[in-house]
Length: 200
Length: 200
Image 1 (tube, rainbow over the protein chains, first blue to last red):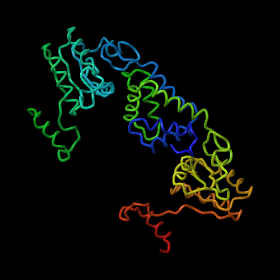
Image 2: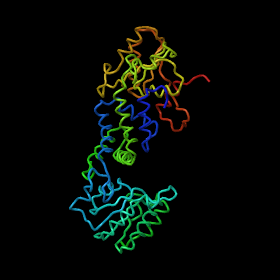
Image 3: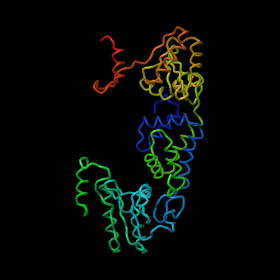
Image 4: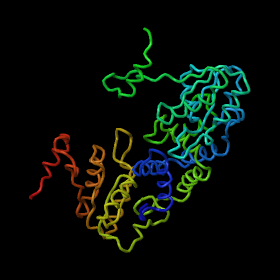
């Protein structure tokens, strides 16, 4: 950071710049925005950051981020305990919950199988998933990893590990996103949409 | 925020969402990014926010944000004290300093004249600017307010207020930005570029 900035300002720009998708210009803009705000409002952000790091833990069952263990989803009486939805990251649970359709439990792998980047099976919560299934009561595991190369590899790995238990293993449908033009779909998406076509 | 999120997480998403240009999706992404980070790195951001609010004050001369009063620019022996560059916001000083061309002092108005939004002359540091000029020693005031309607109105107001002192008052040139195609220039910019044409 340039020397003509007061050190605390340069430091905050630097810290904002470490966030994903925040470039140097945006980091500057956010910093000067907070400088213009009343102290209370800026400190509310600082406090909120400190609070999540202090209070948020992993659920010991599904490995979701939570203020309680087990998390409120695992603890809920109203969830369908025969289904497990396997996701890569805690944020994926938020996205799925917002649809309001899924009523089962979750299992967060905390990453995707990616040997090229040094992320191997043991780095993911796969053994823990196998253990949950082994304990019984699960009829279906819905693999909701990303529709990427790593997500596919992870889904395959999960399927291989769970195959011995004879339960239903499903994967989220892949195809055209709603509202999209066929014209702009890429080849891979179109191929998947064709392969996965349904009677109508 | 949805009830299925732990309260500290929902709160941090909410706080991030109050920042300019940060929508709900980005706020989620930033929150879950910080949750994945080691506590030290996330808390460094919280600390940096607290530190700027604690240590940064306004320079009593130019109203720049600074850790010292007067700020390091006003206090510097090497700056040209006969020139004042008038800007709307402290961030504008950073942008101008990065060019490395300007060696004079600054004056931050902290806003632009905008009666429609209830920002009147008394809300800006215009009286303080007049007072600085009145004290003598200033030969030129460069008005570097934004090239917007409000910026123009502010520049006019500054010019009217400083006219009695008989000093040189200049305004940043307006015209085609470097690297731009004539083809994509808007009418107003082209008009200004034509009006401001120079011998070549």
